[in-house]
Image (cartoon, rainbow, N blue to C red; front, top):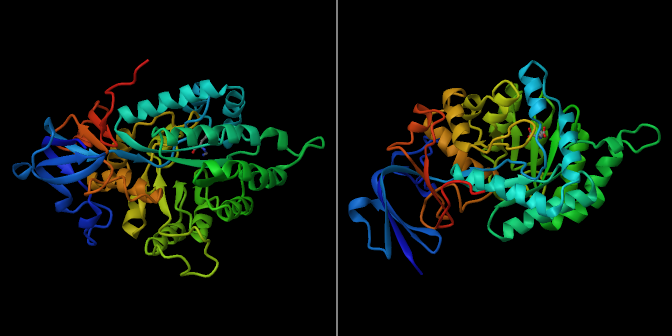
Length: 430
Ligand code: NIG
């Protein structure tokens, strides 16, 4: 077993859960950000962190030259399985058209006609881009197939990528859009028939390959009643729950997610005080099942409010009220939502910068939301921090302090990345 000492760390953000300060629930305690530090990686895990002067000997040493080191980003929301792009739709939006769920159908057409090999190549390329930007834990979803055959194809691809260590979490999103063959016209089946398919045959086919089920609970996609049917079927199949909610309006997605004990509700652009309160109330929910009648078996821990700053900018939506959510005591995560329609970027550093500059989070709150917050949204304790035993996922910034992420917006600040203890290629290869 080889050990690697990383030295020359000007600022080490361990965000070690063992050092959490209850007085700073969304931020970082002083002990979680060490100056002049070092760390040791052994067997893909963090084996030691501490002052540089006390660093133990190791088989090899890497000096990062006075740079800041963070846990790799945990991107808990992406849609990487797709073919084609929607640049024309984006351009029209910048000219004043508003976003609607229907665009998903354009990508569905392109994705259904792609071969397994081509889709795999596309997804691998997108993962490489994300990792080159400091992302080391990545969730992604099905949702551009919308037939049993194509959703299964996407789910199998994702589970193969997880087995290869390329990806971390897979989500079934058959309930992304009602496909046009279920438009209820001219004798064709309708939306409720599609909900039956998603929660029946499609779920049965896909469930063995994924850990999560998600639903787009929104006007133009699925109403709360349809969304609940899908989520309950997913829970009965043993999947954890995620919801796309309150992106385009007060869709009921947030209330449903909190009620059913989803691990995360994502977007959360349109919230009133009762929505914020409902999410904050879940933050004290313990992780033991059965503390509330009717709670689903998979329900454990808070419903994390996952904000998607790049998506908000790309759709010119009101920014999700991350500041209010944190102030109310809700658990918050930041994710990229990389997809061809509303956020064609996996740049988590950009999302963190935006959260600081435009959503009014402190640097510590934004970094935590993009690491520990994402991990909580995925119910993972092994990633999102650099406590002893954590996965050795390091993001070395080309800066002496992490505040440069917001101070130097848009600059290429990712210097080196380690994932599972292995240094990653610095750029995406052809
Ligand atoms: O998270 N909102 C639903 N799903 C994606 C958008 C998908 C698309 O427009 O292709 C999202 O923004």
